[in-house]
Length: 121
Image 1 (cartoon, rainbow, N blue to C red):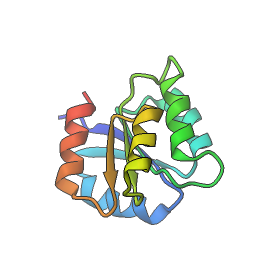
Image 2: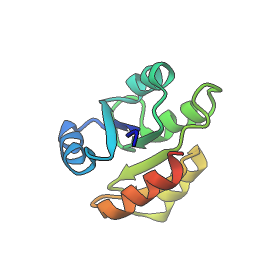
Image 3: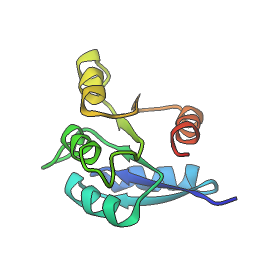
């Protein structure tokens, strides 16, 4: 079975290390540390799904999501926002920016896997 290619966009490398340990068997996880890097990587490598942190310096997750969803080459790639921001205002902003799913940290790894399987087809 071919692994699902997932791009993690997060300014905290530790989050990549933790997800690599829990997702490694079924998913091919790649990592970039900024929204700007995500734009170039996504166009060149076409991941099956993107896990996108909201709070990052420079280009935040909302702006990154808008740019990806408004770029023809990347518009169809599912984006799951993964963030510590739990209020409805943040959640609404995430969906308004174009994300496909919104999860708050700490999250249930089984739910994350379920959403990846659902969206990364």
